[in-house]
Length: 91
Image (tube, rainbow, N blue to C red; front, side, top):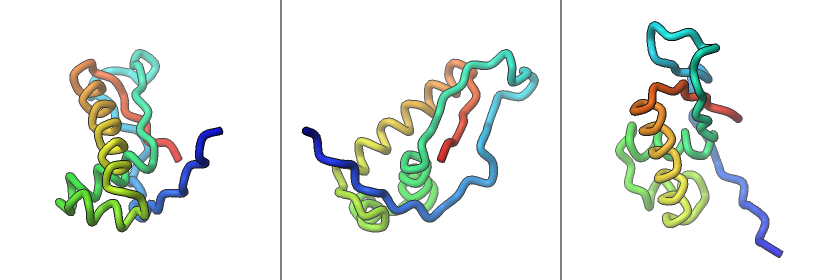
């Protein structure tokens, strides 16, 4: 039986829940979903330029867990940018 997931502390909230390429209707786009922990990890490490160790402490998770979350979030964002997908941030 796997260990239950620890709740991650998320302090930042996005101003909007969707981002999409300009000039394309939403109905025509594929969607890439970003979770709140991925959003928070990217916000802390990439936007606020906090070290992964410190960001992990703020989210109350280990640095290695933060690193996996960050990698997953960055991959989803890169996929959306390269392939012209909408990005949805879900709770």
